[in-house]
Picture: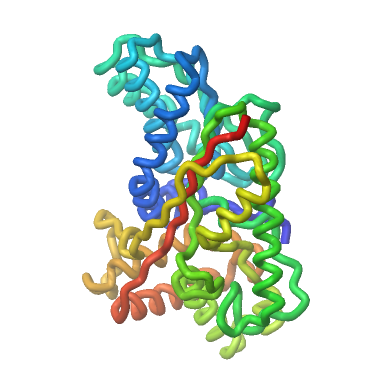
Length: 372
């Protein structure tokens, strides 16, 4: 599977778009904002009244969340420069994602964003910072920027995606991701792919960042040492259930199911820490674990179908969130004709699951400084 070409969230502003179904990801950004703010302040203070600051947001996607981190970063730089009696620096923001990302919707939203930002910032500081935005299409597992050109790097809910589906020695029968029934060779292949990718990511950023630069990464992960833990694999197991039902009914070929695997790995804090220390270019300032419930995807403004009860709205919205994330991958492998049916079944399974048990996702956030 050519992940670089296929991996992107649903674009546009439609009912199934990522733009309209990313409240859960917004909640994660909100939870981790204190770590982002501290790293921003630490960077500015260490730079000693900089004239220019360059920041990159990697895996920015599209929709209302895309500029959320940039806004926080700009406001914090303005606030700390004002507090220290400095002229605000010029700020360059690079927004990066894979080529399939809907960059059009991002840049169409920029004028309104800049107008709102100007009002907020100018209210507290008439000498507000000049801000410049650019889009950078490409995989963050490769070099994206000139050497020693970045002061700050941020990424949220992107680094769990792998550069490719791991090369499997055995068939991951009945599964689309790691699970308790997966062969040990499958688990090993996923972990090795994560190690290769994350190490390459760190090496590329080390080349691109200045000495003393800051980087804050939030990755969908797990607390458990078990890579097949329900806290990280359950949401994909439920999608596999929907697909397996359709295989049983003859709607999907068994060989199609057997050859489909999600290019994702949800690491533990220990695994993240180990890779950072092994690569050796960064000092760890903070390693934090947080959680967000599946209910965080709930959007009360969405008009639900008549058959969807009030108590089911959380599951309905979580299914829409997952569709916005996973649909392009499913369409590329199974085709468009079965997609609607798959997600209708998936929604019913998620609703049933959420009615019976507490469901949550785990976030691993790491804040680092580039070594001298």
